[in-house]
Length: 385
View 1 (tube, rainbow, N blue to C red):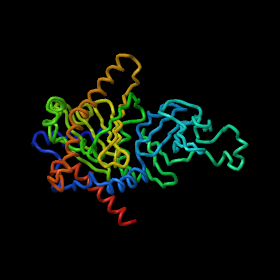
View 2: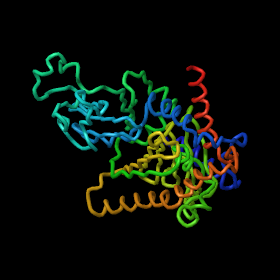
View 3: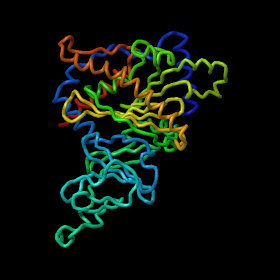
View 4: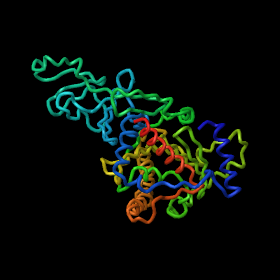
């Protein structure tokens, strides 16, 4: 966040504290319960949001060096990203062009990828460089049977890929003006500490909803988050479908003693950025959490989440490893023990016929914005199709 923006946001947060209010939407919004449980809705969302547009797979630190690679299949599509000797990132379907086996597993560093089925071998550029009994495939030139390429973009420390080949992608359109805001964090300088996978009986949108209001802080999190943050107090700003919430730590009042030109609010807030539709970047004190949220298979009532923790310095000593492990355990503990168990009761409650809609109050503008954008995108796709 640029320093000029920190002053703007800091002023708003202090004003909310003084006036006992928060960012407000224009009206109450009702979200149909059916959109969390309908199989047809889930199929539309899968094709629209998780197949045909750019998805953020994490920070550049997932590919820290030349020769690094990572795999990702949370979208339902097997993806392989590599960084070549010139530091350029490439994206492919993680599918051998012979019989379809995955050629890479997990992540790490490699010079080539050898298919475990018949040893067809591909380099970091996806070229097919060797195959046993090559003469048996004389009618299939190696030059035309490299890994299938995917559109991939690395910008300002973020990795983006479209899971479908031959799609036209526009990162400027995707970010819609938020790029400068993100660039100010210098995300390319962060280091990947560890990742954690969560699978829950919740619609993927319900998982995203967890992050979109602070109204619940001192109810659900009365012993964990409430002592640290102000309750029901956040700013809200949008960049097209993308948006930001900033909640104040109780230490923010320390800023009142300083000239605004000297303000650094980053140690007094939690900043939540939603990169539409499914990535939640969280700024916490001095580190970054990236939550990548997906529907799980074709069941609208299951989701899978990967949380990546990124640190400002590499964790090279046992002391620093323990410190960041404690941070990771803390945040995972809050969502696993407090947020998501409640979310699963909500998911079950959708089948009770208690109500046809759930309600977002005017003090929950991020929820309204997120779901309005989803609905509009689905409707636009239906009208175009």
